[in-house]
Amino acid sequence: PMTMTRKQRLLAPWLAITLLSPCSSAFVTPNHHHSPLAVAALWSTSTTNDLPNCYDDAPIDKYGKLDFAITDSIHLPDDRRPTLLQAIANPRDILAMVLLAVGTGLSYENLLGRYDEDYLLLEKLSIGLGALSFVAAMLQIKVGYQVSARPRRGVIDDAVMNAYAGCYSLAVSWLAWRASPFCPTALEQLDGIVLWLASLVFLFSLVAPIMTLVENDVDDEYSSSWSKVMTKAIRQSPFSSSSKENDCIVPSSLSENELFRTQGMLAIGVLGCVFVPDCISFALGGSSGWWDRVTALHPSQRILESSTTLFALYATEASMIATRCARKGVAPYRFCVPAFAVVCALLALVPCACCLFYLGGDVSFFSFYKE
Image 1 (cartoon, rainbow, N blue to C red):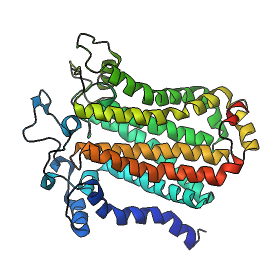
Image 2: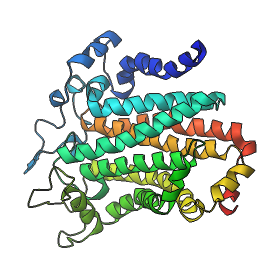
Image 3: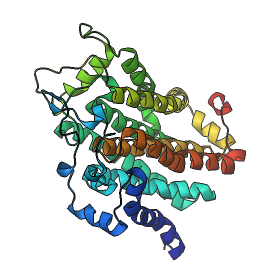
Image 4: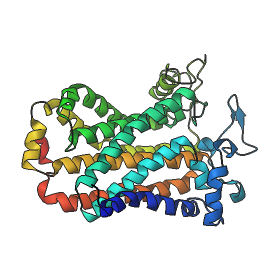
């Protein structure tokens, strides 16, 4: 039976999220003066439909007023900004917060260097929630839930971004499962299919922002440009709520705010594609016993590889929460991006450094690809 100590360790992340949430809007939202109790009370009364997502005098196109994803909310008065709790009081963000709560627990265990049964349980929960996040993203696109109906160029398009984030979460979850100590033998038989697909997702994280930036300001006559094809492929697919629309007019250029966001996605993409060598190695040598040889030589390699991929999962979820909050006017994107960087450091970079410190004697950094 689970001891009280183990129960406390597993419940600690949930307690931390509960205690910190009422105060977190003060960090994300500039110049808000709500007390923690007042902010907590808003949790039960707020709805997504009540939140502003554009200026009252914003320019209008066929889809309505241009929203904050295009214009940013830098000039929105503070008294009109929703709190963080109001913004995340919806099923999609609650799922993401549950995943981040589990990630908080796994990151905490890394800080202490504890890699026991509780750690593996947190990994299993993270993998399951990562797969569920993919399903949620696909459902969002299908029904149009919190996905803008306005087509935009390339990876910055809301439907494309949600599809990419969902696929990325599934890819890192699968890779973490494949590399983990609890990977079932039957999973190896899928290496030659799934991990090649996962490598394409990781490559997309780098290529898509580059193509979106390179083709910015391209004349509308170039209707076959890759960034436009990207948008139309998602929005006109049978899995999209807008698939029945006859036209999908994609603008030829990005707004200043979209340019800033795409540049940020390029920086993320540079880190996001680091798992391509792992996927290729598994796809080429996993079924031949390569991974068994590696883990025999380096006993902690399974923990290291599964952990680092899950850190990427937490960063992806935090990024999407920040994006959705900025689009609702919680804070301008230029405030949310640094906040996202802090969360990534706490949930990914610092725990990863601790993981390398504690497991460094039993792992290989690069040579294992050739073993």
